[in-house]
Length: 115
Image 1 (cartoon, one colour):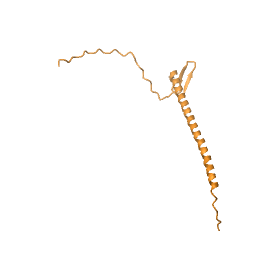
Image 2 (cartoon, rainbow, N blue to C red):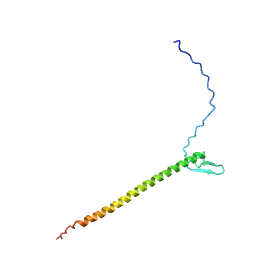
Image 3 (cartoon, helix red, strand yellow):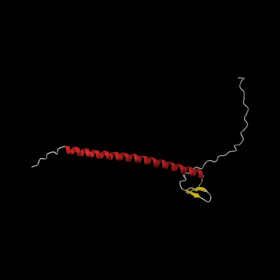
Image 4 (cartoon, rainbow, N blue to C red):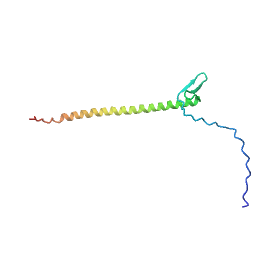
């Protein structure tokens, strides 16, 4: 047990010069804003918070991008459904013509008068 050494006592750390203020938790999603042209700032209409202009612009751009992607997706679906509908109408027309031809080939059944 003679190989055990005691470590020197560490000096206390100096006080941390950096402080981070926690973000206030707010139930507001800042969906209604006021753009102040004079102060060149963005304010929430609901909670009156001053918003970071870049964050607001980025959020708006993402919303617009999602809407654009959704619109493009719906357009593709509508085109696919329209093509399918056109094909079904062609099939219906062919089937109706086929039924009509088959009905013409089959001799009408004789009807017996009822007494």
